[in-house]
Figure 1 (tube, rainbow, N blue to C red):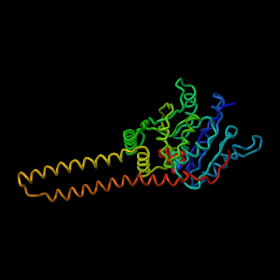
Figure 2 (cartoon, helix red, strand yellow):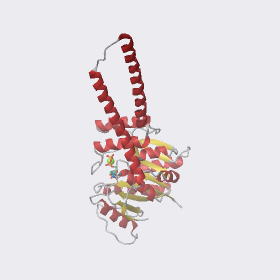
Figure 3 (cartoon, rainbow, N blue to C red):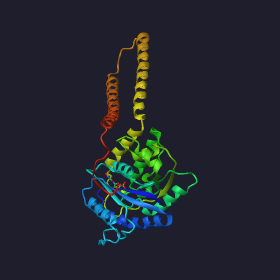
Figure 4 (cartoon, protein in one colour):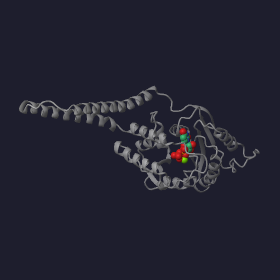
Length: 337
Ligand code: UDP
Ligand code: MG
C-alpha cells in the first residue's frame, strides 16, 4: 500500500488563486504518485470566506471524487486533470477563525501518514513537495519534519522585513523557542509529530511556536517565495503586530519577570535614597527640597505600575480565554472523509 500525504491548504477569500493552485499542484501530485509511490489527498480549509471560495472547493470535491467514466465537463477555471485529484476534501468554517485555526482543523482531519501545510496563493511552491518528501524519508537523521524558511527577504517591504527579523530575535530571546529567521508554516511532517501537535489543547495557537515546542527532528530548507499571482495578502501591519504580541505572550513569561525585577530594583533604590536623605538631614541639617523630583518620580512610578498592570492583564485575559475552553473553530460543513 502506498503511503498517504495530506496537503492542507487554508483558504480565505482565494477565489482568484484556487484555479492557479490546482493547475500547479496537479502535475506534482502525479509526480509524487509516479516516482515516489506516494498517494495524496487535498484538504482545503475554507476559513469563512465571503467570496466564491467555498463554491469552487465544492466543485473540485465533486469533480475530484466523481466516477472516472462519468462525464464531467471541465471549465477552464477548473482542474483539468481530474484523474489525479480524486481525493479532494474540504472543511468550511462558520466564520473567519484565522489561519492558525485552519491549520489545526487541517491537521486534526488529515488522514495521511504525512501532512504538508501550504498557502493557497502559490507563495509556497508546490514544485518543492517532491524534494521535501525525499528529504523527509530519505535522510540519515530519521527526520520527523522538513520545514521551509524564506531566503528572499530583500523582496519584502522595508517595514515587514525589519519587523519580522526583530520579532524572531526577540521571541527567541524571551522564550525557550529557537525559531529560524524567516520561518514559515510551509512544513511537511510525519504522523507522530502531527499527533503531538493536535494533542496540544491551547486555544491561543501560535503554530510556529507549537511546532518548535513539541520537539522532533526538523530539517530547515531555504526557499524563495514568489509574488502572489492573484488576490491579496490578508495581513495588515496592525494584524502582524498583534500576532507578534500573541506569540510572545503565549510562549514567554519574561514580561512578567521584568515586572517583578523592576519592582525589586525600585524598592532598593528608594531605600538607599531614603538612607542618604536621613544622613543628610541628621548630620548636615539640610532642608528638604526638590518638589519637581517628587512629582516626576510619582508620575514615573504611576506610569510603570499601570504598564505592569496592563501586562498582567494581558496574561489574565488569555487565561480567561483558555479557561472558557471555547472551540478553536466551528465547522459549518465539510465534504469527503
Ligand atoms: N488565510 C486563512 N485565514 C486568514 C488569513 C489567511 O486561512 O484569516 C490563508 C490564506 O488564504 C492563504 C494563507 O493563509 O492561503 C496565507 O495568507 P496570505 O497569503 O494572506 O499571507 P501572507 O502570504 O501575506 O503572509
Ligand atoms: Mg501569501
